[in-house]
Amino acid sequence: LKQLEESRSLTNNGVLVQQLEEELSAFLNVKYVSVVANGTLALMLALKTLDLEVDSNILTTPFSFIATTSSILWTNLAAKYIDLPKNNFNLDPCQVKNYIQKNPSVKAVVPVHCYGYACDVEGYQEITEDLGIPILYDAAHAFGADCHCGKLFQYGYASVLSFHATKVFHTLEGGAVVSSSSQVKKRVDLMRNFGFEDEVTISSLGVNAKMSELHAAVGLINLGKFKEQNQRRKLISEVYRLRLSNLKELDIPVPSHNSEFNYSYFPIFVPGETAKGIRKRDKLYSHLKSKGILTRRYFYPSIPNFDLFSGVEIKSGLINAANIAGQVLCLPIHADMTASDAEYIARHIVNFFVAP
Ligand SMILES: Cc1ncc(COP(=O)(O)O)c(C=O)c1O
Image (tube, rainbow, N blue to C red; front, side, top):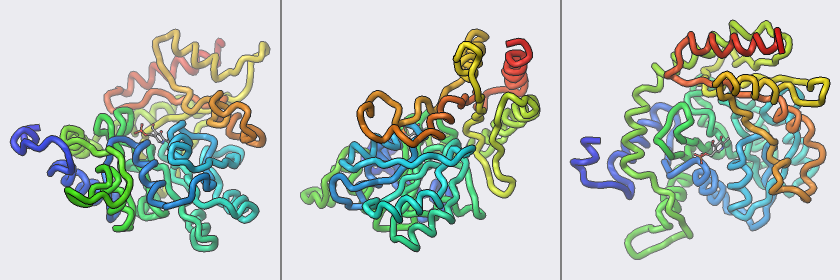
């Protein structure tokens, strides 16, 4: 903040934005980073760099935060969905490939590394190699997550991160497009600043998606804390796992042993309904709320089930996504929680099932 005051530069690609981009590039092990005002704009700008015709079909997941789909629609592209596999909240690239082979109008795929669990990036790479289709990862949850020895962000056409205040690394509001392509970096950098090439030349239609120096300063401070905070979230996650994994009423996903994990979310899945036809997940949600514990039904409903899409044919055939959305509950997890906070929450969950 002192540096910010001394530089007297508040925004417009200032020194702190540049420093943050350099540090993120090293931290994420990716060549090019363009920081922007938020993750949604990052998705929109990355989609724009694909130069697709209006209404081109983009295949994406029905199970994500609304921004994954709204950024596709907002850039005048058409969102198409396939269902999740049973028991996974990330799309299966084999099913994606089959769909594209039957529907060659698909021009790009936007998968999500949901909850920080990396997609099968090698499966997606095959799609690009065999069918020439670019993969743009929505990596909003994946900061600090990894696979394949630190190379997660080297896969695909580009990846998009969110640095919203709720994320494991944040700049209050913010986001980034990261890739191995100088061309993508150049295009995003231009478009985030109205398309100005120089003072009198606008080389492409742009928008104001710049990150301010204040936001970048917050990012630089938070980047230094990430590893230590990740250890604290890991501890919370271990307490939950220890206390809850024996409950047969719950399904709890397990991160892969051979990849780094960011402990950004702790999703549990509560299948089934009560005799009165109420989702058990919703009963647990209300029970915990009555004890002052705020969990999130994240993501619920699945995207095609939002009223916004009523009347559109996409609802049918997305049963697994709708089921998962009806079962998921994300438990509180953040670096300021203590192990005894997690014990308290786990105890109320156990009590709910012992004496519902
Ligand atoms: C999967 C996913 N994509 C995109 C976004 C949008 O990011 P932002 O809130 O920074 O615009 C979010 C935000 O939570 C998200 O969870």
